[in-house]
Length: 176
Image 1: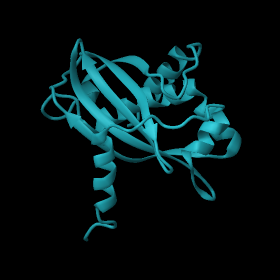
Image 2: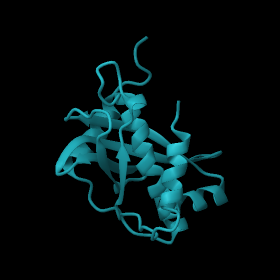
Image 3: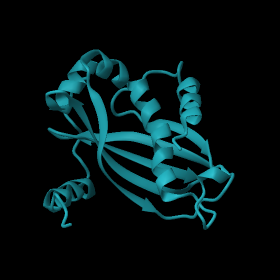
């Protein structure tokens, strides 16, 4: 089940936080509860992605993306991700999450999200978001203009450019 109450708590917690520009990180803390675990008593991989929502959505709100999207009838969707799980995470551990926009191209906004236990990164995700409307995808430049932040994207790191190129070669639809 989606953690609706946890999301409400995060949105409430950051409701009066300072606004963020498109390139500023959002930092939040989260506790791993027993219902977040899999049969091996570690943080479930699917729940990890859901917990990343708990950082990404408040970050978008702090950037004003929710207001702009609602006013224009836009939606925001995950258009792909790649996740690395590197350290075991178990019940009751406290994690710090760092969510940040890395850059954008003509179609997508690229975000990086990570979980940290002290100085040790446990999980890292690259994610691409797309803004959508009834007419199709909304270019990130149009979204930034609506935010009053018309600026070019910083250069994407090589590893992200390589991921974009690899995704472009991936067949769609997959074989059945």
